[in-house]
Length: 359
Image (cartoon, rainbow, N blue to C red; front, side, top):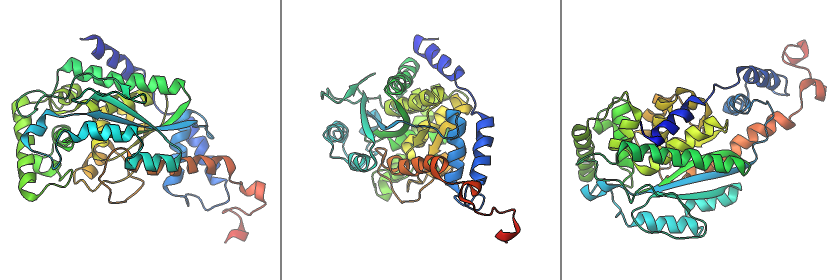
């Protein structure tokens, strides 16, 4: 076992269940507030989940950030995307210069954008860039493994260690984002292998490819699975053979967040592929995830079902970058405010549901 895989094993073993007592305490508190029981719907579920994660019913989540992992994919040479691979480094610079959709939404929601080069196939330099490059893009998974097992474990640990840094800086609410032209292809392959789905069901249109290219993409995914024969019982093997560097980095972000008892808001299709791998490495980690939205990408609902997550928003989005996750952050903060600021029946002098006056 490599040093990186050993570190990953230690991370997984350090993840603990949610505090069930605090979940129950939060539930009791919610039912004492001036509203019919359960009337705030999913917001109440999130409030209880946060209590279990943070071990307090009125947690202070601190600073919030979206972590945008960026990496390139050798499978792009198969023509699976409507955009050329050169767009990946160009978009990374756009993130760093504040011009992308995730930057706009993050400014609106008071969220910091943490952009990470974990595997872009270009030399990048910028004062705000977190340079954590494991390799210059993956290999073509249609011809062999996307990366070695050691590289996959190293990329996961990049995410874990980044969360450690951010936790030390007062970040208590994290969102996942990504950039990598062609990355719906490995994400679809991960769904096909770990979810036991046919490539035709797992693969969608990604950046907006036509019917002919979609059929080709599905064939490429099926070929990659046939060539590599990833083991569904070994999530790291799947990640190495048909995954991506930015996907692996997000696996680490999710596992690192779970280890540090930090809620992690999962974005769309690619982020959810990472979440599925994380949940297979550590089933306990799923309890720390909040699904932000349902993407238009056809495999996203299947991914969320595999993990056992229910999306908060239905916005017909399919951009990635962490945009859907950032949009959900104010709702999560709202759940905390309800717990902290809403009056109870006793405080407000309002008759509760069990009294005759309430009917």
